[in-house]
Image: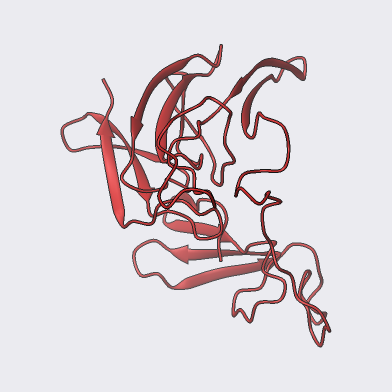
Amino acid sequence: MQTAAPLVAGHLVIVGGSVMDNGYASANPSGVIRAYDVHTGQLTTEKRLFTQEGTPYWNENFQGRYAIHIQQFISGLGIPCIAPPWGRMVGVDLTTGKTAWLRRTGNTKNLKTSFLPGRFPLGFPMGMVAHGGPLLTAGDVVFHAATADNFFRAYDVNSGKLLWQTELPAGGQSTPATYAGSDNKHYVVIAAGGHGSSGTTAGDSVIAYRLK
């Protein structure tokens, strides 16, 4: 299981194993960085980060009596047991280390609850839990789709102001990517497949948007 986007560096695709796979039978244990040839998919490099060769992998559960079950702490209504906001984005000034801006991200639309047969129909700006990273472009725009409301949004990196948003057909719990097309235009692409443990809408879409 991977919990972050891969890095493409030259002819290599570099990925890391999840640090939350304890208790799972996995051929790719956590704490390991792997590099694959971008053309063939062949594994070229494997490096352990936290442990030495010949010793157990970090976060493995060999012969353990217990396993891990990860779940949100939610009420009987199916909503988080903490006061809002349930999700925020923070901009940090790297020269001072201080918070430059702070804003709620996401709303309650499409929230899966225990008191409605379908998704919550209204979008109250409570902030929402998120599972996925942002994309920052050279034009100082942050793209983010990981909130549990199925929305894809763009923010001004300097102020946190919401610049644009659109509703996806399924949960966008992934990290956006950007590329230059054959028409010399720049595009942002997002995989909208949903997320099981987050309870977002499942799907199988990959959607690209052209930047102006």
